[in-house]
Image (cartoon, rainbow, N blue to C red; front, side):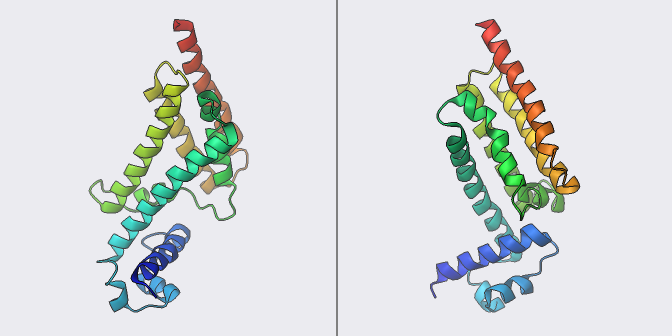
Length: 195
């Protein structure tokens, strides 16, 4: 088996464990057992469990950004306004996934609250990247203040992930959509009123 295959198997097995059980609750021995390798083999691929956690978060970040963009395009087509409004359809699909256990990046930031921790930094990078994606949509849609709109929509998205994972309330997304529509309308209408 190629070294890169083993490395990816470690990442995949860890991602499942970390997401379901938590980063701190998952021991390295559990991951090694899942993959069927020794500690000596593990250390050929990663210096530590912390290194593995950061790699899992980085791969999740890349996957989520690409998937998020693609799901928005599939749902809303090319119109920036439609794509902006479809954000919460994408969020709905994420939170209705049977294996949904909240946002892995929020989970990581909660388990590693110190700003200098590598896992916390990786979680922050994802949050910044998603906000930039929403900013781009808001700017293309002609929002009066794309930065503020992106911040507000991302805050609503985070609220959905946390509230749904804690309460399991299916109406969470309906509430979020109402809030998002009001926020989007305010920034798009104020821009059309200025023009």
